Length: 331
Image (cartoon, rainbow, N blue to C red):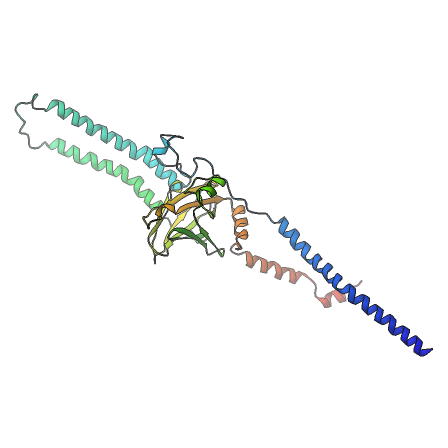
């Protein structure tokens, strides 16, 4: 009787072990699914970055068919320096140049009519005139002073030092494409020109469209650095009033602040070889929230994000009660 009871007890234990062995993998799979589900939900809930669509005639050349006058002058400007430079060109340089050109043309016509051989068979022997010499010395000097004031102001503005918290972007010129490095965010992208079909499918202009744009935030100082890996290039975006040489072994730097969101196109402006004309530049300026999403989509991090996360973890650990404190609390 005792042996039969022992055999029955052993059989029950063996049956329970077999059931547990069969159920363990299913329990592990269920646990893994439970662990993965929040991660997948978080990934689905995370916002995705959407590239901006280019706007016609904004940040790009204007065709003669679209606007003949605009195709022959500067592009609209989207930086404070660009607006100031365009104002100086339109309201100081062009009026002065026009008035001087008309004045000189008038003098030439007057001399042709008044002092030709028929009207003056006997040539004048005047060698100098003190009043005229003073006038044509003083007036040009005053004109140069008028032009010098805004010119020097513009030069000073263009070489303003970026603040310490400016976002650093380093553009590296290669034969024949661009690389953009974000050392503050651990991001690096390579930008190549799209072919004609790819540009057409993306709704952009051929020889301006690229596969990866240089994405930057709007209204934030950017420490724009340029260098090159092989020969001299030049990073130029006309609608942002930005042009800076990219020289091998040298790091040039200038501040850039973009006023409006948009896509702004440029090209390498230094003859750099046979494919020099196939090095387009596309700058995509977006709000800071979108820039942060783009950085995350590239696998980078915002400056200070890791420190904030560590601080939050430490604060949570300090607020959570220890095991001993939890055990001492009354039920």
